[in-house]
Length: 313
Image (cartoon, rainbow, N blue to C red; front, side, top):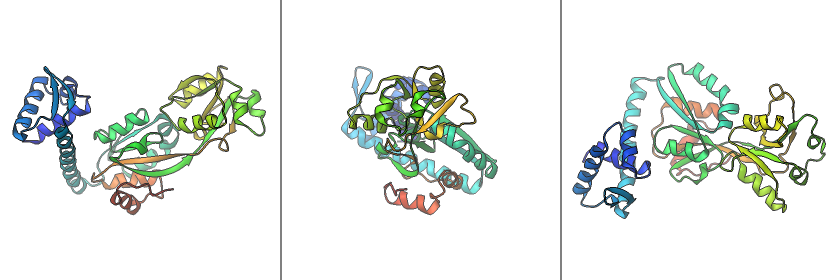
């Protein structure tokens, strides 16, 4: 048994049981991956995967246990490398952040600017995707941290750290009647075509819940993953926009007006997610605290030691 074999079975599982995709991700050949997996199964005396002909179609019951242990072993190997890097190259390395567009565009720029000033020798990587995609990036080891709102609380293998709460606003052309509605109500919003986030993104669940609770069926004519795209189509007159309040900037969003809608929807909580049992470089703690000042090293370590329980805002 060797680490390479463990990496192969984990990568096959991560790639939806597609051996070709796993081999490509590992920069090796499909026959080589298949051969090493067979060798591991023979040594263990159990099949890790269910096969139909030459195709892998499922994970066996013992295979699930083997995969769980393999992930822990590989994580510990990664931790050993991280410890060495921390003491050999303090203040140097790589920090990979997986996040959604709203966080990357509106919350992270100032944090990243300050972080790069403090840690000029740390190479930053920023990955964007849906909440589920960015969570998976961290679980696979592709990224160190995930910053997101929706879906992040559903992952048992992530320690979730609440950072801040936010709510929504309505954006519309400056002469639109919705901006004159005082007070702004869900009934008034539902009168107009709506442009908002895709159902997988940025607090969409709270918006749907609010309308449903009032027995309203709003007409959502367009969805997008990007606040700037939403505002572009609002300017074109396709509808009114419901976006994160942080996404509206009067100095940048010329021609648009905004009405606060925080009284109409439940607040959403943005969290940072970290894999369990991963050894963190010192600069990762520093980044977390820059993003959410309440999350200093002792708070982060306490949350991790507590099994990832949300410590609250």
